[in-house]
Image (tube, rainbow, N blue to C red):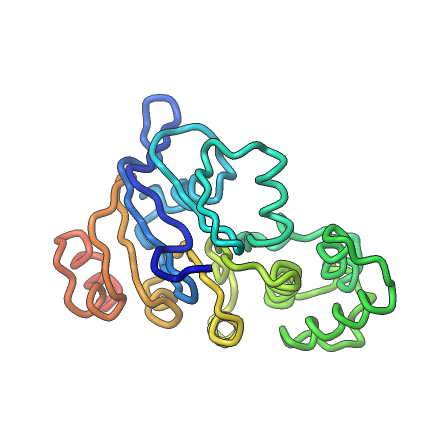
Length: 259
């Protein structure tokens, strides 16, 4: 695979709901091994952009290209549904804001982590359980909780379990939608440390949607600021947050400082 082009590239990406634009004319690149944060207030189009990039919502306009592990560059909007499902099984992950949307809540923790392996052809139960145990420990869930169901877990543990379920198949890009929202500050900090260490260790590309500029600062290399479905400003995270050029970004940053 070549690294002279982005892993994921969108040009003019647009999606509308009736008369309202969810996102409009968005250009964005995501390179291997980098974290891109998409920030903005509620209703700015962050989640619509994430869903359009990941093809969780179909239709809309613009070009979205993805470079497969083989090096082949594919056009995602024209990709058949079956091939898209294969990508989700092997090269992509999605971490939901509400962990219950990304887990099978009445299946054991080990079963949640093991299912993606089975979907990729693993059949040896002992090996699946061993790898599941390793991943639970990797995301700081005690191995003796492997047979517990997610309904018995705290919010932070559920999010860590969802991360393990996504990363067990070694995806190349992970989409994250407000992964720390609703968690206590101390739990958020531990989860962000975990995400940051796994990104570094595994060389993941990550697109993370967040309304929290502190999250963007802690884990992202680049930040994209959205308002009314459009990109207002983008660049290296330190530059965008420390020396914002757009008045809207200045307002976001100053409101955080005042808070």
